[in-house]
Length: 607
Image (cartoon, rainbow, N blue to C red; front, top):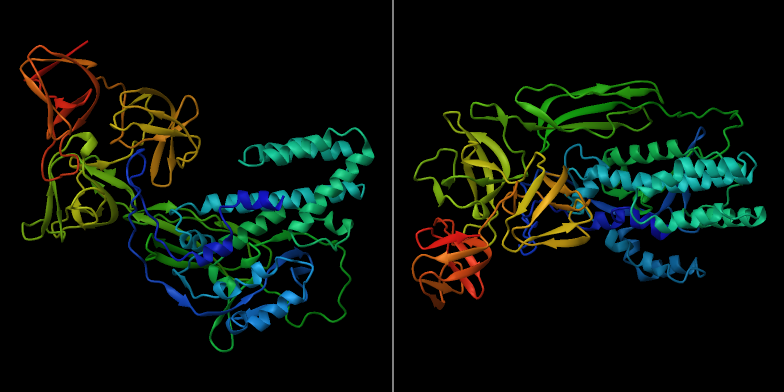
């Protein structure tokens, strides 16, 4: 069961913290043969926290009495300093306290490597930092939160319902109805849960009541072992509320990452042990009945404010902050603002919530809203890919003068159009719209160059389709792959150039799109690799004059001569000068043994 939970999460949070900061990137990786080179976006100013100690892992349990920490290894101290973590004698002492756990050294031996400085962007939430640290794509935090809350849902549902059954609060029929109406439908939507569903189906199919009770106890015990708990009574476990547990997990992940960095007396910081436990937490754990304290808490928990930020993708403020206050436990709600020249690009997961004893931040992210041409269409979003429709140039500055020109890109066929990643927006002195870009034509001499190009929609356009079409034709000479997942993983099939595919719908994946075929498979929606509708090319050609065959599409290395009126079978098509953007390209037909010209003066297509 514990392995299943880890499979559902994107990765261990501890590993994310140690992975280093990698900016979100977009790569031209849809083709089955294209290099997976990445392009990083501009780095934003960060604040580094000097972490010199780390809290040891614990499970957070909460109920009406407050929040409690249940440390996984009660004989250990609550935290370890960098000096202690690098002391072999100290580490061996930790190991000796738990001789019954033979592989405990696998954890203690890594403590020193976990105590590293942490750099955060202004107002960065925990989930955004973890995704960024792992090199994840911008906007993928919601997927991560869904995975973590699913893990919490599983553990809280299984433990809570099992305990309520064991204590007589649920009949077997009620327990089974909850499973079939709640748990099973949710698990069926998640990859990797087939074994769990099969196990529970078998348990509920058991006719003997004593055997059924024994199996439920065993399954519940495994989950308690995975959460490092189990000393609580069944009556206490029966108070677990799945919805509260999920809401608590979501609140922790959307809280500022600084909540888990604790300032020490010497000015250094300690990383909270909740990070090492992968935010293991359950809510409403204990019995609600609480014996009144004759001596009230001299420092009762008080509500802390919620600060609302309005920033662009680089963290720059685009509207004044708002501060919300309210009583502890009461609800708050925030709203996006209408900001001139900006459009909302990311709504926070914690736009609504409750006031807690910890300060919270809610961040709305906006993109510049720049118009092009007379139609008023919005330009491609930052981080997305565009390509050149006509001849264009790359410039050092927004002023498009010969002195500022870096390179010129010739007009190319669809397959070979020069491609760029948008890293920003600006205007020239005269008000003309410009893209700030990075050249991502990986096999060309211009790859990696940065500068400015026009943002006119008649000259540049998005690389990916945004609207559904009924059919697409594969145009990439090497074909394309079809996958089971929209992130183009789990390859299912390969489609060759010229194949016509039926499309069910189009879906978004980060800053790109995918076509979903009628068979449920996902393929790229990159216009350089596929084209909407049915594109036909001749299956045979006849030579109108004598022509030569060559080994390359640039018509070099001649390897055969054909006389006039020779019929040749066409196996594909491509264009010359694929990676030379200073020259235009020309159609070539692929035939057995090489390539011949596609010029209609020399060859003619036949049925």
